Length: 190
Image (cartoon, rainbow, N blue to C red; front, side, top):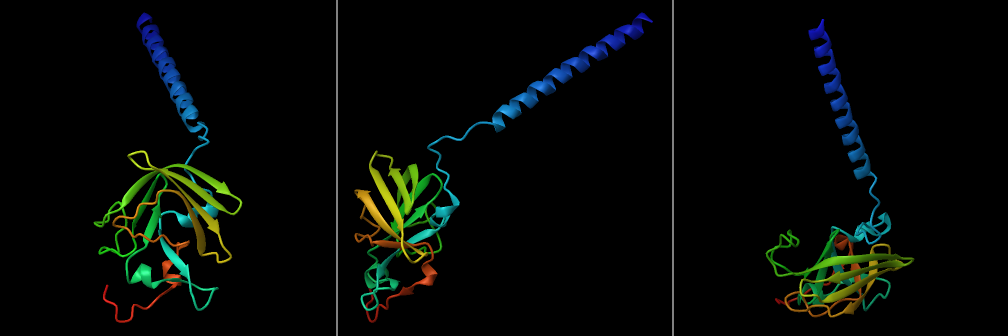
């Protein structure tokens, strides 16, 4: 009988130990799932999600039709305009004209600039994105909505790099390049 009580006591102790471990684990997971998000989180509201994870291509207003945007001669034929790629935590500035058009940074073989996104601020008419590169240079990109839902006006505060990616930053960008006409290069070979 003593042996029976000893085994029963041992089983009871093992059960209590296991139950306390399970409760500690459940509490641990409960605290992990209830962590509040940081105020400076780089998540973006659905309102501006179309600007992220896609190549942003520079546009100009057509000189013949002021209500029409296009990818102009200098961008397409002279390769003198940069594109932008915004990811959750990184921004890439790279040439619109590049040999590996199907590949975007950081996987592109073409030269590009990398910035960390340090802050995003949604405004009533756009989004402001603060960037900083690995040598501490800061850049602010302000994307403002236009009447055309596929087009944003851009304002830049800071020194936008030009080497390798194009010296002419256009005033407008789109996330839907295929919806806009490309100006004809004519006989120009580049």
